[in-house]
Length: 256
Image (cartoon, rainbow, N blue to C red; front, top):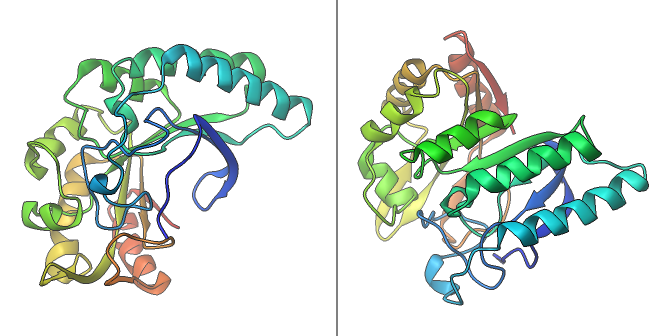
């Protein structure tokens, strides 16, 4: 069953990719707010959560994050990472850069060994303030699920103007200082067969990865409930084969 995060700060949880992760949700508590409507999103469909579309304020985020970090450090269990995720796309927050400024300052003050990570679908990186903020965090993890617009339309369901080519050009502005994350899956949706593990898909995706030249790539598959019930998880063995092809380009690749 898909579900929303019910607070501004959530966890900590043991992340497959990041370690002991304290989550930060900039999106509404009672509704989802995202520029994608991915068929695999653990928060469910956008339309299933039509509540108030209000971002959590910078001040509330700073106050609550300070309280939780102070408690965790006092208990001797500081987080490995502070992760911006939550009920949608965190970089949609109108003061995302300010929130990142606050978070980095709190991290430096209270738990300097912790990393700051952002999980993003890359739809807001046309904004210079968002790019600046993402370049300051330790792990800016940006989504690219396919090299083909037709696949993105089915899998990610962009809620506004989006093209793979345009997104790749913006990703190249990071000059390699980014992590690309890709969900591999197969299944059926609205009568369409979906499979971004085919040779056509993977080869085209690898060309884009080579062009973007990120410092790292993360490949993963389904691990939680999805709103579309006809999706299939890709095996770890298949993911490892894809990762080996990324590594052959001279780019680090992890499998979660």
